[in-house]
Length: 184
Image 1 (cartoon, one colour):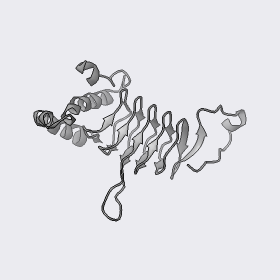
Image 2 (cartoon, one colour; image 1 turned 45 degrees about the vertical axis):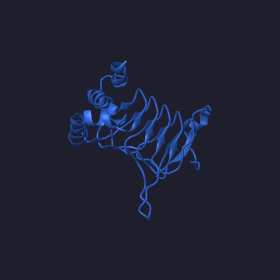
Image 3 (cartoon, rainbow, N blue to C red; image 1 turned 180 degrees about the vertical axis):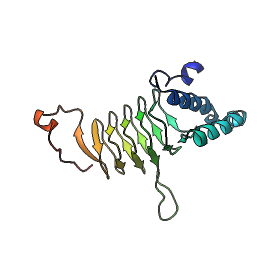
Image 4 (spheres, rainbow, N blue to C red; image 1 turned 120 degrees about the horizontal axis):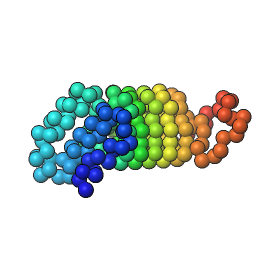
């Protein structure tokens, strides 16, 4: 059972050695989030995890982050995830992705992003604030998401806007035309 937990992202990262390595190390560090006893026992491993994954590999994925199974880490460079973020199952994150909160003028912080299941993020996507990304969502490269994205959508831009719903079939003339962005 423990081995199946540790290797739950193995198959989805086939051919991606760095993704496999990071996710196995992440899953091994996760028990430290259970309670203080485990955190004390795991302390040497947590120090190794922080040094190796963050400093050597350049991926900030805190061990207390909630990440669903089958997480694909594409390229694995410059990924920054706020530890309070929640990531659903079957998600695909490319390099230079940021999930973070916003510091308010009074010094307090907003909540962190919540990512649904089956979400694919392009390179250099930035999702900040207490934002909810629905299930079955695709967010294009370079997008900055500051508002919720509903289920079954494609969103692009800065700020990100929904350009297409995935649960509605595309009309033949829409495929090659410029779609008008919709405010989310």
